[in-house]
Image 1 (cartoon, rainbow, N blue to C red):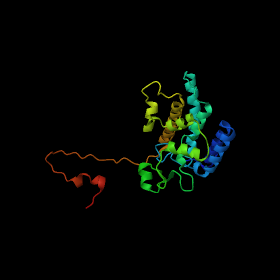
Image 2: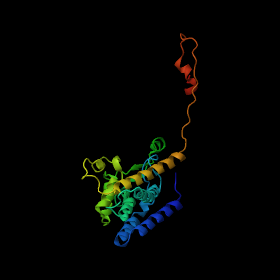
Image 3: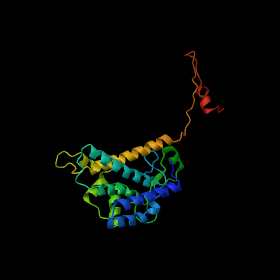
Image 4: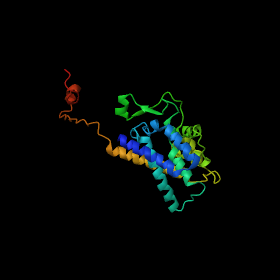
Amino acid sequence: MKLTAEQIVQNWERLLEVIKTEFTGERQTKLLSMYTDLEDRMSTQPASSIDHYHNAFDGGYVDHVLRVIECAHEVYDLWTRMGADMSGYTKEELMFTALNHDIGKMGFPGEGNETYIPNDSEWHRKNMGRMYKVNPNNQFTLVNDLSIWLLQHYGISITWNEMLGIKLTDGLYDESNKPYYMSRTADSKLKTNLGYVMHQADHMAARIEYERWNKNKPITTTPIKRKTKTITNPETKVNAQEMFKDLFGDNK
């Protein structure tokens, strides 16, 4: 899937509108400042590097974040209707987490430090779907760790709920989240449902994006039609090259 230049611009404007709608005061100002600073990079970045993961195309990141925000609203309402205890965190904390859960994918500040760069290997693009590759110039980091660091780099304070929400969004796909999700005592269980709501919202968005890619993916290979050779006499010796010449051609 590809987005047009117009769609990329429209998505970016929608993202800025979310910030203006969901946040106020100094927090809104600082978020707008960070997003404006990262606009050239963020507006065109993919959400992942491999086509069958999710949104591995220009503008895919913003498209994904907007979907996660929408899913977070829906999942929050679903949990509320089903009688879950939604206390202990605010709707603003949920929206802040949804907005910034993957911002670490922007990489480090400074020109040429983005996380994903176009893959210059046509073989990997065509045969493995690796449309982008991780920037080898950057230090290794987990996305959620860099997300939290970037927020503090731009002077945006976050609550403990927001920090934990960003960390737990990947659920048990991240091994370091196991102690939070797989607690053995009542006292060590998560005190709020923010992490569960965020993981469900992110997982839902990524699955929808995979299905959208899967329905539109092109067929790039054609099955080989093999002719079956029938041997009427078991004792007859058959030359291997003669048997498979229809596949490989006559190389004599």
